[in-house]
Amino acid sequence: MYRLFFNLFFKPLDAETSHKIVDTGLRLASKLGILRAGKRPKKIQLMGQSFENRIGLGAGFDKNAKLVRPLHALGFGHIEVGTVTFHAQPGNPKPRSFRVPEYDALINRMGFNNDGAKVISERLAKLRSDYKNLPVIGVNIGKSRIVEAKDAAEDYRATTKLVAGVADYLAVNVSSPNTPGLRDLQQVESLRPILQAVMDECQGKPVLVKVSPDLADDDFLAVLDLVQNLKLKGVIMTNTTTRRDGVGDSAVLKEAGGLSGPVLAARSIEMLKIARRALPSDYVLISVGGVSSVVQAVERVRLGADLVQIYTGLIYQGPFWPRRLAKALVN
Image (cartoon, rainbow, N blue to C red; front, side, top):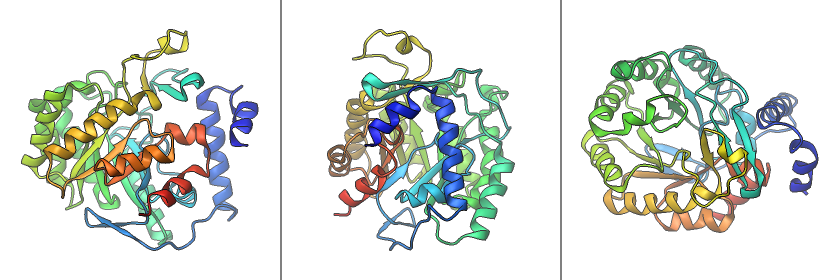
């Protein structure tokens, strides 16, 4: 039924317009009390936080922390807002988001469009003041576009100072393909000062790093060593890919940007296996990328993921999907 609705209503619209309609609809439904999360027991203890379930929403859907309550009502146990940058920024020119329905995939080159760390931190502070029944809220932080790579650590530091107090955990994003030079910061010599700056200002909140699926295995292992060395809480695997392996050559697939969806699944699973072997069991692994069925979500947990995030699957599977996934992962 949802797929028919999607094809009739959303498919004729461009991806970003569709997202804005969904955004408005979710906020309105929440405001009118149509979409409301009931009290749920906190069942899973990780990183000093109590999670209702293992399913979360990956960063990028709720860039400005305006949808936490309605998304919680859909069944998510945690929501990662952002990516948040110190400076507010409009992102890349439009069009910048594209559907690839033959692969249930998306391509985006949004470019960290967001309201900026100060505004978003104030919004989250008000949310926490006004409501107590909330999911775990992660804040995904990235480099401001106007900041040079050599100054990246101080930019991340400044953002962390503003958002740490209102976050349940922090996710350091150095892996988006849509900010020039950002992925270069995954190299250990560049990554170390960034992670150290975030750790210095995190106010004791858990810090994780989000990595690219395009990292070579040796580079990924070097990042995992750094995670242990700096005593981060864990790793989020993975962001979108710039590769087009295993897909066709249609016009939309030639668009620049990060590709997400089932095409990411194989690499996301490979990296999950590598990380679980390399890190002690008390390090938290969040698996994201290519989860498009209950079976796949269960597989991620069996392979060692502590939490599973979705994003593209929500677009193609519909609003009732998070609750089905969460129910499947109860045991």
